[in-house]
Every structure is written in C-alpha cells, then in structure tokens.
Image (cartoon, rainbow, N blue to C red; front, side):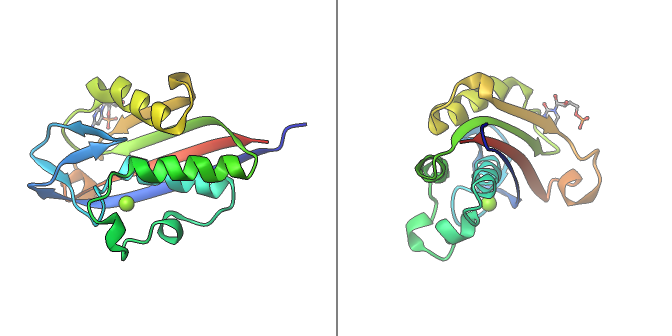
Length: 159
Ligand code: C5P
Ligand code: MG
C-alpha cells in the first residue's frame, strides 16, 4: 500500500507600497506588495513548507535562510523547484496541493488559473493537482487592515 503523507504550511508577510505583489510566481497589479528578504511570495513559501512538512524535511528557513544574501529578492519559485526535487529524492510523488491566500484587496479570483498554472508547472504536476483559494479577512485584524497578508497550504504526498 502507498504511504500517504500530508504537510501543512503557513506564511505571513507585511504589505508595503513600492513592492510587487507576487503570488505563486504571478505578479498581481496592486497598490501594496509583499515586503521581505526574498520576493516575499507568501503562497510559494506556504507551499514550500507544506511539502517539506509532508516529507519531514524541516522548514523553509532551514533550506533557504533569509540571512543568506543568495536569497535577497530571490524568485521564490526557486524554493518550490528545489523542494520538489528534495521530496522526490526521498521517493515521494506530489499528489495534491491545496492552499488559501488571505488578502483584503485586491480581488484575486481572476488570477486563480495563472497562479495554479505557475505553481503546477514549477512543481512538475498537472494543474488539476493544485488548488488555490482566496479569502479576505473581513476588514479586521492586520490582514483586514491591509498591513499584512497570509497564505496556508496543505500538501499530500505518496510513496
Ligand atoms: O473573504 P470572503 O469570504 O468575503 O471572500 C469571498 C470570495 O471572494 C472568495 O471565495 C474568493 O473567491 C474571493 N476573493 C478574491 N480575492 C480576495 C479575497 C476573496 O477573489 N483577495
Ligand atoms: Mg515568507
């Protein structure tokens, strides 16, 4: 019987003027963008941690430390590429990714397909294996006040 593993990932970054809003490698037009050492792509970071968690391979900071100048303004899709390699080296196949981005504005639903395509292409899976959902924070808390944005992900692996 297949060994099935699940892993969860979560990330938060501050929103700031003059920064791009990049989600799953897709740049979304927005007044505010995500601030951080890398490109601060919360969705890619949450999916990276979900994959690492499912394979019990530690976390994103262990593999891609934000103190390393190598990752300054890094394209976070690089983290996904390397992480997919790592989990496959452990004998796992990626069965499914589910995720949620929590961002007050702008509306993201028109970007669902390009984001799914970008993540799927990067991980080497089919678009049907990648789910991306969006929520506001109903105007409350730091996310609701557009001070920050969050992403959650669950990865399912088999070997
Ligand atoms: O947060 P709320 O329940 O009001 O979101 C309703 C719907 O709006 C979501 O299911 C999603 O389709 C869409 N949405 C979006 N972009 C956001 C937040 C929500 O497209 N930033
Ligand atoms: Mg991050």
